Amino acid sequence: MIRGDFLSSFHYAETYNRPAIHRSHMAGSRARYGEIDWNEVWRARQKRHESSKHFEDPSHNWNRKENAERYNEGSKGEFDNRVKMTLAGLDITKKSRVLDIGAGPGTLALPLAPLVKEITAVEPGKGMVALLKENMRKEGIRNITCVTKLWEDVDPEKDLAAPYDIVLCSLALTMEDLRESLAKMDAVSSRYVYIFWFADPPFWERMYIDLWPDLHGEPYYPGPRADCLFNVLYQMGIYANVEMLPLDKVYRFSTEKEMTAFFRRRFGVKSQKQKKVLDDYLAPLIRHGGGEVVVSGDSVLAKVWWRKAG
Image (cartoon, rainbow, N blue to C red; front, side, top):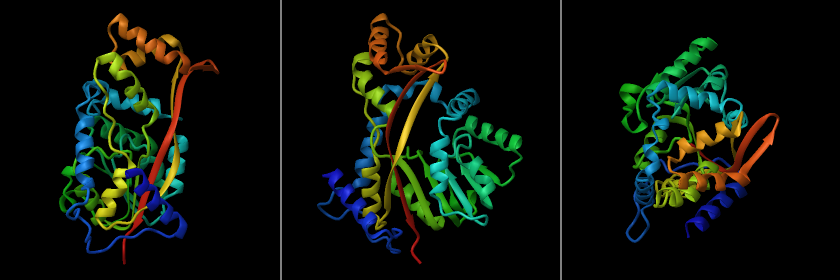
């Protein structure tokens, strides 16, 4: 049912090939009696996702600069195609003012900065913000302003200089109340809102889904997907365009020993039984080439965007 609704709406936007818009009065901001409330579906799936034990992984604490540096170093080269694809799909000019939500270490903000007038980067991780500012200094970039807050905690009147020509949120939909966050994005945009989110489980999450029951004796719960995002927008009266894009994940290591150590930390592997489960799972995924050990997989990314009415 969800997938059918999602694909039908996607077909409509593609068939007519025009920017999706929304009703200015937001008449559909709540589910009517008898309808599924997709915001509550999102909330329930996100809460269940956060209950998974993998959230205890300290390597994903982005307040720590060393974790941000590891993320930034590991992403060099890997994200090049996604960054180019993302920037090429934005309707920007040298006069554009951009809001980047979930900016991380500047994955999009840094290459975007020379192409636009100014950027406000919202990022809650103190380690990520420290690295972003360090990268700005190294590259001589002066048109990025950082707001070190969760998007849910941002006060547009106090923290932002709205409106923005472009509001961008790439792979950063971790909030429980999606509707409220989307409404805030829409409110601070004067032209376009672009959201990039997973259409299916990304490669790294498929690994969690496959391994978690055997490693830890309980299921791993994936987060909500782009179908749910689209339906929340639809109930808000926002009829968004949807475009499907390739999303690759590549892990590169110098040796198999380095690879094994990385994934053992990632999946909380300690016992001999757990080590065997992980080794057996990784064995068919390993590729060798160019002096590297590579583990990779692909998935689908949804670009969901709309133009403000008026």
